[in-house]
Image (cartoon, rainbow, N blue to C red; front, side, top):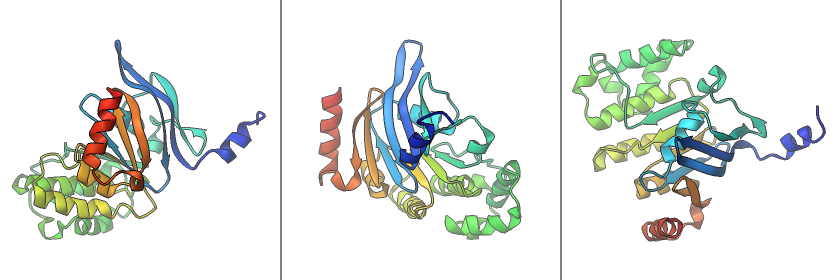
Length: 247
């Protein structure tokens, strides 16, 4: 072990760290030297206007993209987000459900469970559907599902393999008030201290309600970050001011 390597690992904060993370497309910096700590077992909401690089950050965390510069560490150790081991530990939910409409809810989960080669798969299906309030619709084809029901089924798919890191990309997009409320209840159960949750959303109210920590990102850079308890009561005005200051 080289001098200092052990000390860095021991002193590094537990959780995921982004160190100088940069992603360049041609001449555009979608992310520009982002430093961010995602504490283990906590929930983070990432806000920002269109083009802020929020989805790019999630795609880097998921391993879909590689950084142009910088690195991602976990507990002080460099993290290979393209590795099968990391992919097996994460769950990703976006406004695109990636469900098969002609299959039933149960068949969809069974299909994805086979992809992950999950053990005791059949024993996982009913609890997964129950957790998102779809147990009574387990054998209906997804073609008959509303947008909100599809999003809840997609959440069940996301959590089927019990990931330790959950990435949520605009999960409330296209949902009405009732559907958002039902999905919120399911997502709230993720705040169990076992999972690290990162949510990208334009929904200031829902995002703040779900978060322990808040990040506002503008133009690929972090304009503000802190504890959710530090946010002013009028978060919309607070958010707009931070965006305008960084523009």
